[in-house]
Length: 222
Image (cartoon, rainbow, N blue to C red; front, side, top):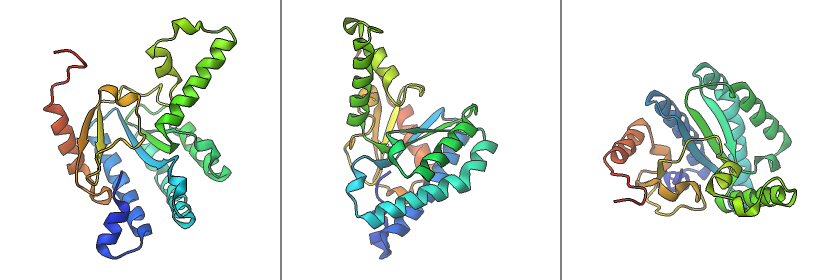
């Protein structure tokens, strides 16, 4: 979800306004995903590299996250949406961690669209944590190192209970993965759009899905 800052700059308003409008785009897109019948939607909300941003911007982003969770939890519950967090979110402020885990518990048995939010997430960090978990299992004798296969790594990742990644969308004209779902994107279709994230909506999501539906996926075959 890229382009909040550029959206704000184009309008001569503070970056915070762009981030706030970005939250509205999240709401719009999640509702559209539900209406379109998507099994899962993963949003890259805060990367492990975003801590390098100015302190006041990080504070604003965390405040917006708190507001989003407080205001939308009842909609999640009412509309059968399951909230899942990926990334090392437990290093966030304790009150935010408690809030996140409470919503995750309340929506754990919902069977509609799963909304996965990546918080303090980096794909390389995720793979390191998975490698450490498998190394511990091997050291304790629970698994033979020579028996480790891709399925074991899949199961050790934050996304273990999510369906395979089919489509990865990048907004604002950027054409790179930026440390997002690197393992999971091995055979995902990539879709790049010039739309800045605050302007992304249901129609933009539908356009991405239509483009995806028109592609032929071979998974390495002919």
